[in-house]
Length: 264
Image 1 (cartoon, rainbow, N blue to C red):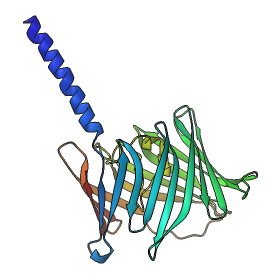
Image 2: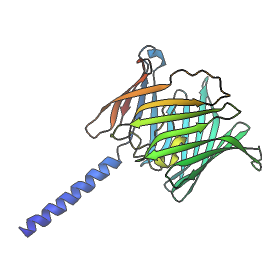
Image 3: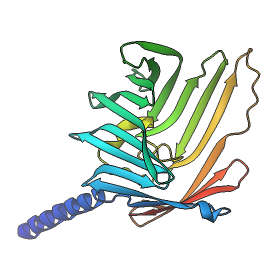
Image 4: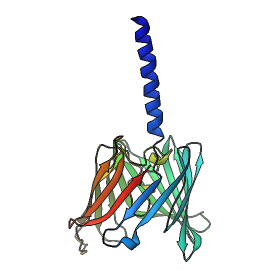
């Protein structure tokens, strides 16, 4: 009986390890974007990896290349495609402190913008923006700031103060399902917070899949802007392991804006 117990424990341990390994190797290969009313605009986005490290993301709009230092993503280079020509448009450098994103510095044409992330005692993150001179020696801090709230590995709220005297606070709220994000096994991606997106796909560094996104704008006495409702609802289909294989995105009118299909 003792031998049988030992055999069972060994078998169970091996099974768990194999399951864990197989779960970590599930990586998105192709994301299909489908427009039901404009099929000529459909396109595929393809992902290339080295193990679990993302190397590049490519579709008809452009390409994103990634560099690592250990398990940290330290550089993202974005190229745009136009009339068959590939042009470098944005380069972003990432730094970390205590296993957390500290800065993201974007180089775009002759403009340099730096975002800093400060981690508060209540668990929220304050994101501040600086404009840098061409020589990167002078920094001008913008008036507006953003506060990000993360719960269970998901960005659930982003509160942003508008600049330039608009007297507006925009609060974006995100809701999630309990299933696995298609990007969750990419090394270092969860540390990028709001810095990682693919075209209009956002919140990709979260643990779970976003099911609802809506924005509330709070206007002060000097604001006279008019806002339309801004929210999207997402519905998913999943494979047996809980990863999405299809997503339908609806706008506030109930119209399907796009359909995504996931190939692993």
